[in-house]
Amino acid sequence: MSFPKNFAWGVASAAYQIEGAWNEDGKGPSVWDEFCRRPGAIWNGDTGDTACDHYHRFKEDVALLKELGVPNYRLSISWPRVMPNGTGAINEKGLAFYDALIDALLEAKITPWVTLFHWDYPYELYKKGGWLNSESPNWFAEYTEVVVKRLSDRVTHWMTLNEPQCFVGLGHLDGTHAPGLKLQFDQYLLAAHNVLLAHGKGVMAIREHAKKTPVIGYAPVGHNSIPASLSKEDIEAARRSTFAVDMTEWNSSWYMDPVILGKYPEEGLKLYGKMVPHYTNDDMKIIKQPLDFLGVNIYRGTVVKADASGNPVKVPLKPGHITNAFRWPITPEALRWGPRFFYERYKLPIVITENGLSDINWVHVDGNVYDPNRIDYTTRYILELRKAINDGADIRGYFHWSVMDNFEWAEGYRERFGLIHVDYQTQKRTPKQSAMWYSRLISSNGALMP
Image 1 (spheres, rainbow, N blue to C red):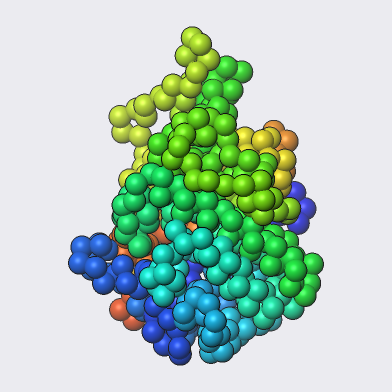
Image 2: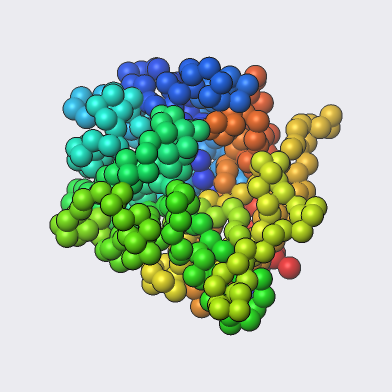
């Protein structure tokens, strides 16, 4: 009942959410540094200025990962820490930090999986138009080249972008994330197209400059639907719903089809019509680069059934359906059907690059942090992931979000997703009950699952 041999168990984090040191050692400002200073933008007026102070405490954090027996760690690089203006001058102290972090991980026998962009876009580039500027893909490629040349003698696992649906959609369409824009839909689609071009040029830069054979992926939101029953009709309806396109940012196929299939989905082209930015066949050749895996971040799914014509119809959740502290519905079956549908459509190995629970927990009077809800949540989801594997999907890994409590973007420090509790006043780390459980799960390669 264990998982496949060499299955990659791991934990994940993101630079802006844990590093702090927002203006130290030559780092330039990011759009999140600026957004956090906008009144009312972040819950409770929180900022990522200090966060978990990982910049100064990374050795302690790596030691905790080693103690827990974590074999793989997904981290991200802060673009403005490496290149304060986004292009041009390189900040040696910023690169030295990542040098030291990678070395510490490897010394602890932990494999780094590096995400090049997890939302902290250089503010100086934003002032030049950001993702709306046609040069933005080239800016990302230049940054990618700098990082890969420096780290690829030790790093082999790479991801270009994390959740473009969020940093493009929430940041440029809804305005609830940095940089806080509410663009017209055609402008949003232009930003998205430039982001896809950046992904393609990023992959090209990795393959050109990597000193060791790279393993390259991409980590969009794995927006998906769940069949209401195991009937063929409901399964097909859920598949159709997973790849359907609507007038929101939550479209899997719009962000996955070009990257893997080399074309925008026809349904989206028809729906968006003249709002679709002009693009060429050469654009699509750039966007569609060979990938070694598709990363998907999955926390939930929408239940659907087939109507009399076979069309998907949303099935409302029953009153009292369980939710996490973020009020997201808990739907473990999303980790069966999402990965299965993505594998069937794209024929790429799947890695779950994020999955986890925001829960309400604290250090008890005995010094421990008890979070049985996180253990139960993760058990339920991983059981469903094993079903996806049994269904024939090629699933290569699972990264729990997150390694530690951290700055949860617009929600500030209200949400606690971590396996390790962080006291933000003292920066004391306390592994939670779930961390010990996850450690045992890893050591058994998933055999502890019921």
